Image 1 (spheres, rainbow over the protein chains, first blue to last red):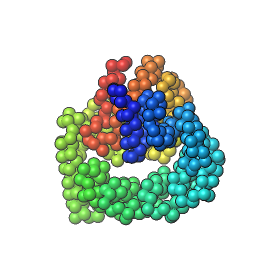
Image 2: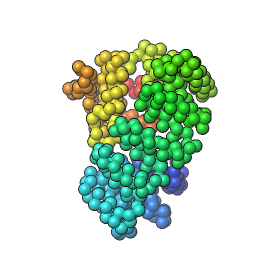
Image 3: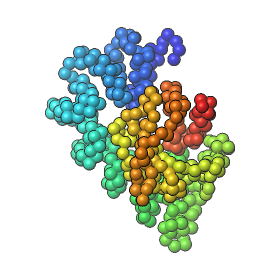
Image 4: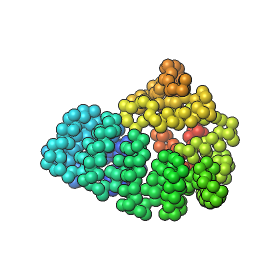
Length: 280
Length: 138
């Protein structure tokens, strides 16, 4: 960014970050301080959206000074608005004044019971206090109300994984796969959990779901590796007889071949030869 | 996928005469510097291959642009349990200065981990570019 239009480029980049929901607090704050703060009068009505964005970003990286400036500006312009109160709650969170934050959020929910953002903040707040079990309970209640919020299901899955409750984590992934059977990442994650659970039956399921992920996206390296590892395991350690062993060896060989081809087409040879892993 | 990463790293180490001697982890939460199950499991695996291995748990609160020594706790395996080692001097002044300047240059954004590699095989987890930069700084 090296022209007199610096601030415009910074503004456009912030727009892009908002649209794509990129989270990079440090960068947002840097753009703000270097290019936008002194040009804020040029932003017009967009300024308020930018203030909100920068405020959240600043809280993310503990730049309380920046957050304070943005927050003051917003609350002077929109006193008592739900979005400003939401920021107030997040500010309390960043200061680790959780009790204040919880009260702020509860007040908002009393007026607007369907405020998804605030409900999720409450889950995040429990998570940041490392109260995983309570966070799970809160999020579980949330998914009962908002069953189509896929991000929430994914987060619930991850929380169960922290608790190493694989059975329930698997259940969340099943919900997600049913919601969108064409998403290869869901299949891959389901397979990874099954792989972690171990045992012949789970390993077979893992292999099938890795295979489905590969079918949906042939370039998914994690799924290819997963397919290779699960079928090798089945062939070497969990084999149910000669025929089963042969089939799994065949699957493993196929996956290995795919992996090798991918490396040959995208890596320099020197890199491949130094990091190549024995059996492939 | 960790298994894949370890297998590749193991192959790399063997071909260049190195060993996997440790593991470091920084937790998601700013104030959490405890070892969790993931760290313990990985640590155990590394110890199986290299008994003197240790684990570094990063203390997020001590990471900043200003040089601070020992921004981590070191754990090692003793009698089948993870014990925290006494603080001792593990970094010298030069290392601190270099680290601080790397942080200022924002080099961490160039760091490539195994996840980046799996997203796109072109990314090299050996981070040759940063290694080179490091040897120039020293």
